[in-house]
Image 1: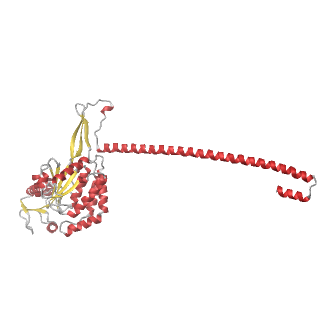
Image 2 (image 1 turned 60 degrees about the vertical axis):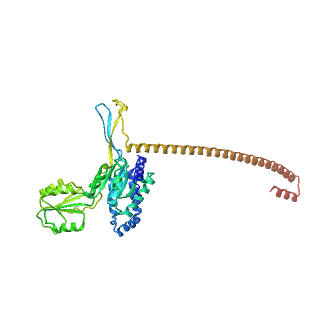
Image 3 (image 1 turned 180 degrees about the horizontal axis):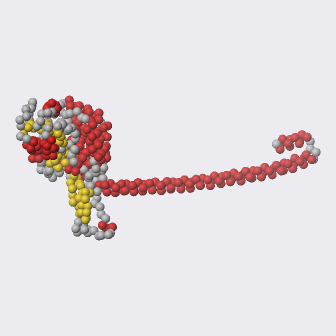
Length: 431
């Protein structure tokens, strides 16, 4: 989809409607779990990119590295940075908040995509992942689909994360009302291009672009292997040195090398090869790149490692009423994401307690009803038993009465000299 206006509108709605109490780290954890469950599918998509010479083979160890980094990241969204009384006894403070919509412009590197998407979620920003080429397209689109599934599971608009392939970067980045910050990842020429066309602040980061300054040939074999291994290296050679390669920039001394590197570098990784300790120290101190080394390879593979605070804004907040000294009214806290979570947690616990109380009341009512019914049944049985006892007693009395009559009749006939046959008949009858 290349409808820029619609994409920007969806991004705005997504971050606007995102609930403040969403736990970004939990969302990120579930994203990594889903990526791991779909590892086979990602590998299949990645094979398509590699087969078409349109990507590199994914290293899932990098996913784990990003997972660890996100787990170690502190909660930064709506974090209170300071709070104090001013000279007029008013309360004032600073708190972080989200920017809105971030536009990532890059070369299609999957690790960059994943890192920036996760940090956008942690800071409650929308992100539009933009590239002029379809490098790693199959891999990246599948990963974005999986991420959007997790977003929807948390009732977050899936358009919080969108991917866009376009040649109309100038049209996109001129929307300074819809885009709040641009992140450009690439070499110096690419960064300058994005800076030129963007109407908002641009954060520039290098990635897998390297600088190499050579003023000593002691490690020439090692240097040749480095250059052979990676083509994205800007090579600077001190004047007068004879090197076995042609594609390099000749510089007069360490000062010119540092100046040239700081002007041209992508800002990712730089290295110097020298036997001069003073020059090595100056290089380490003055070069403006993220990774700087001496007599070692600059070829460091890693994530962009963008400071998450760059995806936040700081706002000043004032409590408008004068504070009364020595009273409870002087206790005031600005609303933080943690406070909101605690409030919602208390609310949920209260609701759970109320539900439990309702259930207990219902159980008590049911128990009382059962007891009542049981008592009725017991009373009924007791009456039935008493009636049976009464009937048995009457039967026994009647039986005794007839037995006495019979005995009297028997002994009367016995002592009246009855015949033996009659006595035997009476005995059988008595039995």
